[in-house]
Length: 299
Image (cartoon, rainbow, N blue to C red):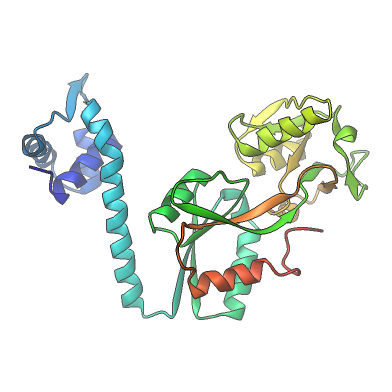
């Protein structure tokens, strides 16, 4: 006999929290209640889900295989509750928009502001997540779309390219190249770079691009977020290559951002659910961002 929804909820809490005590606190119920529900769930489905190990619960291989499917169930529950909220709110248009962190500091607020000025009946909600997480939520219908760049292709999603722009060389304003309108990779080959973690698309792009010109891209630091690169450059730890969309110059007035003329143009992308019809709110957003006068490409 399968688990019921309440048993799945408790199972999910234990998997997330790692102990009966923490799971009970997160659910606002007693520890004995959680223990009893887990026991009933194991009996009901005929599987051992947890082993006790030094006072903590260790999930069995069965539990590990069930975890993602249970999470999917609760994503659908959230989707239903979201629809209920939207129906109750009686708003004309709602837009659940995900985005990667670097875009939330300047670009997305500008887009949202213009969107609301032009279409005040659209009510956007911005959710900040990692690339793979926003794609998963778009695929599951928890987000209408997500703004990103250099995104991989994820199951159940499509990518719409909104625009393309050159990557930027980032340095202190005292740097010899700071007054240039553009630079080439060859001119940057001897610089001390702030780079990115090896698994990130931007790091792979830079390594490949430098190698094609006979140079090696060897950063002295590796960071996960581009905003961290901005901070390290500001602290005179090196230079960096950054995306053209985050537009963080306002926050870092001591830095110069210069176009790199011989790197591939970087796409600003919208992740949408595969084969889904775009909502009027999304169509309005796409039209706004793809206009020539929208910030993001040149300076």
